Length: 321
Image 1 (tube, rainbow, N blue to C red):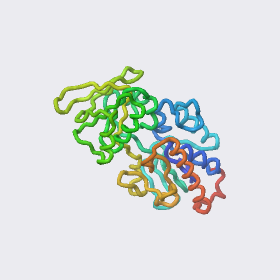
Image 2 (tube, rainbow, N blue to C red):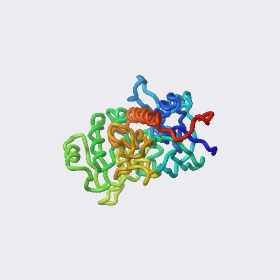
Image 3 (cartoon, rainbow, N blue to C red):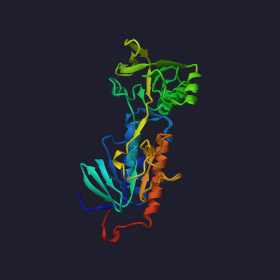
Image 4 (cartoon, rainbow, N blue to C red):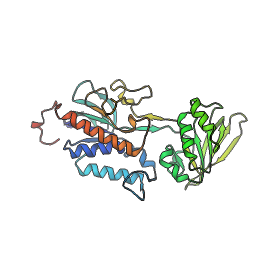
């Protein structure tokens, strides 16, 4: 790796990372984007995206992400593939250790590594992502209008998603492996008052049953009897939480008790001057492509403003960065 100091580096390539790169590149900051093993993020596992503005007929998730990447490239964004294993944010410029690349030095940093949905890791689950299995009711609920839906989970998120999905489902079954729910009482009461929600408690999911073109059911074990059952369904929504991709930041940036980056309200600023957060890596509430893209814009603008009077590198002696 050549001894080069970047003005700005973006870690992550979902809507937040790509949007930040577009804005940084158009501001002549020549950003470097470090993309991990799944360039494009969670949207690359989504089929039709119908709620992203500008596409009246909808667009495939991978195509949307590819278009964002090309737009960032058009304005001069540099891309490198690697996995950030460690960061030193104790002084500027910052130093990143990237597996497959080596050391990268940068004046500013935008973290847009997202949050990964937690899945069950049972047979048939990953194979049917985008073919009936989803972790986002807001994104995909519409596609199951008039169909049978199963929601898996016992927390507030599961109750919220189940209530939301009854707008579309002809029948909805909530599956939880215990006989008691973890959700708050108010969220439990709302779900129990919803006549469209059926309950399959004390059931352990074993397998997603599918045809290759879609799913037909969820195989579960009745924990009381030990018997296996098939719950017929056209759509399966896994609502057991998300894990922010911030392990590499621990001890460097302030995180909350769930691992999400803490930002100054109304900004993308972290507790480290020159380090910014964008997208689901700090957004515990909305987790939508459009809100991630918007926060990518915010992070880039905050970063640009920060850099105006904060350079530590002598750019006059650098031909191209």
